Length: 423
Ligand code: EPZ
Image (cartoon, rainbow, N blue to C red):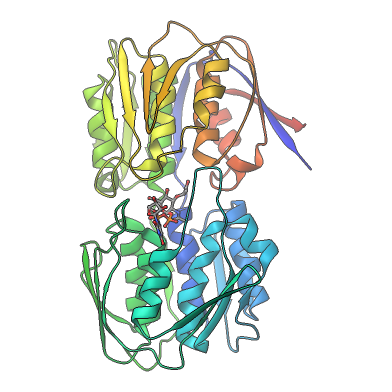
């Protein structure tokens, strides 16, 4: 059933909000449970549709899955299939991260080739290059990639592509290498906190991994991995989104974010402070207060620890209502600006020039019917709606539900006026 959100803008927000476990950590960690026949317990898995898709995929491979609120137990005693089903893969590109575990355990995996998606062309050539290096043969047949590796041997693998490294590619090769013969060295590895979280889980399972969080990861293959119990890290993008919400629509006393990892958000915090907003950090809590005078900024997305591509749409919403000109350059997914036309329908002034968005601040936005196009673009529309005059109707809310746990409830608790109804 299609749903939409109706947001009545202008309510100043205050109070506190609990940040959920990371979606982008949960997905590869859930996939990694396929590496062992023993039970694994994963805690703080956010209740969002992407994690449900992933559990569906694990079940389709023969794993027993149990979910009780945020705690998921998976046991893949025997894997009955090496094929990720098309209808699930089609819905979620991140399903490619079952490739690594399947190859490691079954020496074979079939996954449908992900097509383009709304944030642009998203190839998996670097993943495949890595598997090939470890000794796999790769064929494309009927829209599927079939990876077969009778032997997996540790090698040097370079994962640097033209847009930098690859997060899920690093995850995939790291997972496959845990059960390979000998030592694998990943050069140009992604250093995102989600990669580190996955490495920590794999180490608990018995893997031998050094250097996660740096561009060079060394994996010494082991014969077998066992079950483990792991709590995923706080979602840095959800936390970043609430920081921007506080800057954009917070009352003077601000919003408090609980259970966060401020160390994963240094770049975003730096940009918000430069724009004049106040952020106080105390342990795992952050309080954000809107600045009395604020100014724009120029940002360029980069891999971690640079400014995350998953935060630029939300920043654009903030810049729309910030005096002066701000410039956003997207270097990871150059086409990730589907939100611009929608924000302009609300009265924003965003001009696109290739992979750059030039945002001229305006005095006010006004509510309008708009369409969500991907997860972070949808978040940008929600943010703009919180400050727009009148009612904004956001269609295709399922994009938000893919990655934000209970966003409407969390916002309502802060004082926002939001209603969810059938489209
Ligand atoms: C992860 O996607 C995240 N997804 C994305 O979050 C995030 O935007 C992205 O990393 C970048 O930080 C998950 O963790 C589930 P990449 P991933 O491979 O790993 C190119 C969200 O909103 N590339 O690091 O798929 C690619 O086209 C989502 O939560 C190749 O050229 O991204 C891009 O330009 C969206 N060949 C760049 O590398 C490849 O084989 C980085 O992509 C793989 C990637």
